[in-house]
Amino acid sequence: MTEEQISQFLAKYPWYEVARVAASGGAVRREVDAEKIAEESEGEIINRFLRKNDYRIVAEEGDVEVDVRTEAEIDDEDDLVSEELAEIYLAQGLKCEAVEIYRKLSLLNSEKSAYFAEKIESIEKNN
Image 1 (tube, rainbow, N blue to C red):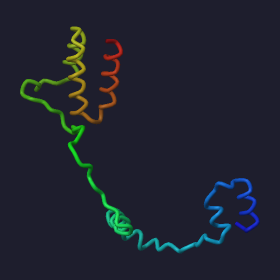
Image 2 (cartoon, helix red, strand yellow; image 1 turned 135 degrees about the vertical axis):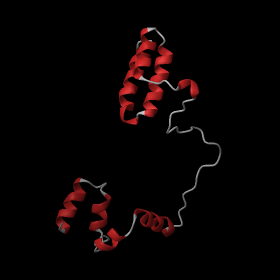
Image 3 (spheres, one colour; image 1 turned 90 degrees about the vertical axis):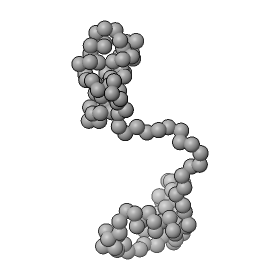
Image 4 (cartoon, rainbow, N blue to C red; image 1 turned 90 degrees about the horizontal axis):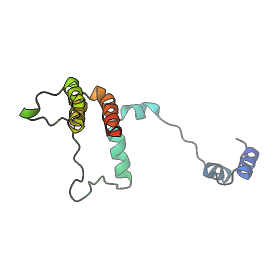
């Protein structure tokens, strides 16, 4: 952009910081070494950033508020978990039991978790 274009742009958008820096002559264009960037791993880039200003990644103190479950908790009594069982519970009017089965199925079959979530939502709406 020419200086005149930058001035016109600033007249129209005075809040635009990049244009103000460019107008003041503070914008410096540096060449980027793409090969050097491609050689660095994500971890190296993050570590360099953290070291630059002495940043630290620190875990919050105190107890963990929510445990994240990545696997279904199924004990010996729950060996039989299937969509058919959930449908039987629904037919018998045992909605809480059906929802529990769908939750366990969702944890066991992550690829169908959205499907099971819709089933649970449908049951809870009709409750």
